[in-house]
Each structure stands twice: as structure tokens, then as C-alpha cells.
Image (cartoon, rainbow, N blue to C red; front, side, top):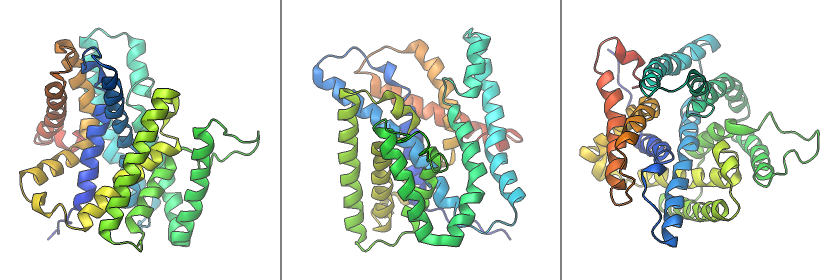
Length: 333
């Protein structure tokens, strides 16, 4: 008899938050005209919260995939790629048909496929992450926590240099081996396994403080200096700290049993369902937003309704597909 593995609630919570955060980044045009100066800051804060989504997804991947004993390299790659490539092909077909419906040019559809500009860049990034995971996994199994700290220290140096446009510091002082997105899975694994000396309560308070301070700094920097290019690449130190703050906050709230009252009720089941559908939602929300744009009232007052409807429909599509035989395996659920 196959034993069903118990789900870890804070992973589900973080994954559900992450997909909603990704959607947040793509619904700015639902807002109406800015009515007062403070509204611009509020909108920017809302949008920048969405920047935490991709780092959280990658951090969860690291927590679940690193320091594992895989039977073989081929088995690992086969399992991981099957879980992301087949849904990608399925949803790309639907997205392409939707683009045909809206009379998008062929050049636009190709750019969507390669992720320039479109959310599909994340799929190609994920391919690279999965190719690197077996190598990082061996390193972490061999060197443990010290290896994690070593890797993250160099990664943080890269992030700092990149944030302030100092990378590379010298023409040949390049940290490409540690650069980019690969640090997020290592960071997620470290935060999930590290035994900190503080109580669970102190840890989630620390996470909350890190989240609030880093978000405030990012909003200020984004508004004052315009970090749009770095923001899109997720390779700056402020977004990394935003991810750390959110991850630590939710992890230690769960460890202090703050979510026990909702885990088994409708709220907990909704969170778990969004988490399960999150990969499918990553693609489906593109289709939903294309159709929603046709009925967009451009009203700040109606924005909450449009936003909730987008989340619901983005969840509903992969959920329905997951109930259909044969399509279930490619639904992203």
C-alpha cells in the first residue's frame, strides 16, 4: 500500500503566496488613474510585494530537492523534467491559441515561447536550475552547513555588486559560477534546515522585521532611482532579503503552531488547493488576464474584484483540467 506523505503546511502557504505574488506583478493595468500622491506609493508597494514570488518558488524547490539521496542522475532529471515540460507544452498550446484569437503576430508568439517578454522566462530558468541541482546536491551532501554558508557568502557578494552596478568589480573577477537564480534554492534549503538559537516566536518576528524593512527600502529605491531592470532579474540584495523575511516569517509562524486553527478548515484547504495548482496557475493566469483585459474597467474601486476574479479563474482552469483523464498529467497540478 502506498503511504501518502504528509504535507508541510508552510510550504503550501508559501507556494500559494508565491503564485498570488506573481499574479500581482501582472495586474497593474486594472487600476484607474492615480487620484492622490500617496496612491502611487501604495500601488508601488503592492506591485513590489509581487517581486517576492519567484524567489519563494525557487527557495521551496531548494528546501525540497537538496541534500537528497537520488537513485541516479537520469532518474532525477526524468522526474523533474516530466513535471514541468509536459504542462509547459500543454499550456503553451492554449496560450498560442489564445494569442491567435486576439490576432497577435507570429513574432510575438515566438517571443512568448522564449520568454522575451513573457513569464515563460521562468520555465527556462527552472530548466537551468534543475540541471544544476544534482551538482549542488552533491556539494551540500559533502560539505553540509559549512558548504551552504560558503556558497551563500559568495552569492551575496555577487548580489551586492550587482545591486549597485559594480559587477564585475574587475574585468576578470567574475562570479558567474555562483551568480543568478541558483542561490535561491540553496538559501531555501539553508533556512529550512538551520537550527537557529532563537525561539520560534523571535524568529517569525525577525522575519517580519526583515520583510517590512527590506520592502520599504526597495519601494523607496524603486521610486527614487528606478530599479526596474534589476527587479525583473531578481538578482539584487534587497529582493533576496524580502524573500528571506517572508520565508522565515511563514516558516516559524507554522512551527509555533499559529496556523493550526486554519489547517483543516476551508481556509487551509483553499491554501493547499492553490498550492497544488500553482504551477498550472503560473501559465493559466496569462490566458485569464488576456480575456480580463477586454472587460477591464480601469477602476481602482473595482480593482479588488478584478484581482480576486483573476486569481479564482487562474486556479479554476488547472483545477478543472486536473479532473479530466489524460489531461490531468499535463495540467500542472
